[in-house]
Image (tube, rainbow, N blue to C red; front, side):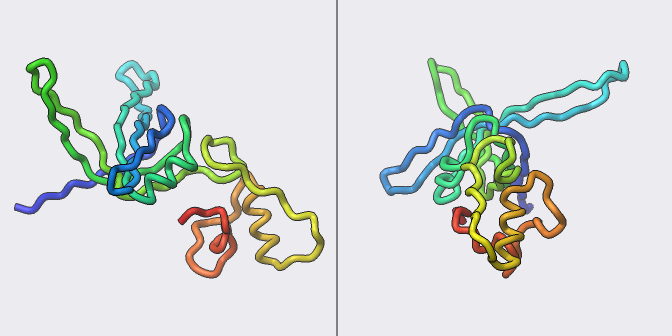
Length: 165
């Protein structure tokens, strides 16, 4: 029988990222996220449940997370579940954690959603192309326009030098 192990989580970092390097030189980032869920209780009151998940990222993804994210930063992680087992004081213990394979930072520059470096200042020099104008609007706007979606080719923001990937 075939197996399938995939998890997708969106939440906020509960602590700063612990970024280390293996002897091979590969980066490893460990952190936890809190995922909130609102539901209506039987008495009609809204109740918020919080679940905490330990996440591990490897390679360049780990380095990017360590550089741009901090406690409170919103993040989307896709990966797989892995159960770690160990023995402590003669008792067998286990814990399920997430091995992140993809990570997406949520929120934009110049927005106070946590993490990230501040947006570069706008150029005061006159002129400039339409693409530069759109990029400036994107970087400094708190309300994205329909054209500010994820870049897919030659659009504004695709060649942004501060994007690490």
